[in-house]
Length: 498
Picture 1 (cartoon, rainbow, N blue to C red):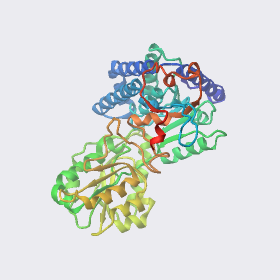
Picture 2 (tube, rainbow, N blue to C red):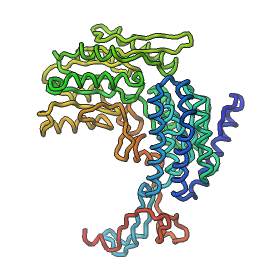
Picture 3 (cartoon, one colour):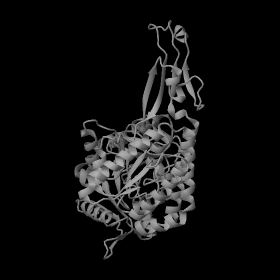
Picture 4 (tube, rainbow, N blue to C red):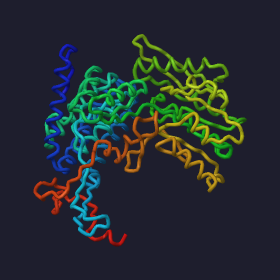
């Protein structure tokens, strides 16, 4: 269902969308997990059936390469199937049963039964740089549907036709599997998205995008008479720290991997390494420039992204003392689209400190800053000072350095990122149970994850029942456990052995 009403009818349209979502939620709360799991698998299969059509649309609207888009569409299908598995397992409900215990160590304990419940309709703001995996049928949508929440997607204007077609395909699959109508809805206008953040029927919102827009939406969510959780992924520069030993042992391989990570998909990835910290005196210019020169021209996602990239690159290059290691290209077409090749610059650490936001703010695109740090620098202190919140932090050590004395450094780095990599590169986020894709502010508004099975927890809340008759309990809390979900039981009398 698509709501694209003219502004004069916006309030009525938004209210209708929200009302339909609330009605769908009433039906979803009575739907067994197995039905939701079947629906998620059906949505994944439907996307696979329409892959050629969807990838063609995505190429036309985003300029991303076919291979990248097919891989991303596969990831989107895997996310849906992964959450189907989570729903089928039932452990996500975190069911806990306390047997009534007159001899409980703190006094008589009543019968208590707790599980997680869906929060209600979820508003999902789609991202521009992942037209499948973080868009209409992406990870936020999959997690919310798995939790039992209907989803209203605010489509991104960068790929409107793809958004509408994806919504049609997925909605048909969900309803065919038995989920209520309006389990998934799509709105297109910015005004509708803002109005829905403030609508009382919406109980949570998810956002992937810029820091500025994310802050505005988060403020509106917090200013409601009944504030709602706002899960925003806003920006990250993902520093990579390299020791002298690592650079000496495998400098060519390491610098080539750096250029590839910065340049992939024209640098339009939330985990792109925006900064590479290397020891003073390190030789890297030729390796970086040679690798960068081999990167073909790539279109940026849309004219707005191109505007921001051109502006930020000019700001960085305008800082006195910035040295260009490799100057990339920027070509603008009559329609406003831009084609780019990567740019790399270098600065000493003290200049980075003095320049502040002019250098530290994110450059969204194929651009990265190499920072030279003096011998004896406390890298964890540098991260705390200059890069306090990121999706990722990467540390490259030499073979003889991965020892006990580095454990304190790694632990300190973990305070400033959701994912700490010991080697490798942050681009490429595995869709797995243990993944954490989130981090301290300003990477995200709340330190949750938008990738991996833990993402479902953002759209659940705990409810406990005390001394409830069996016939009034929800299925996972009944003695006969009709859904067959895992449960933790605190047995009568066990506290006597504490």
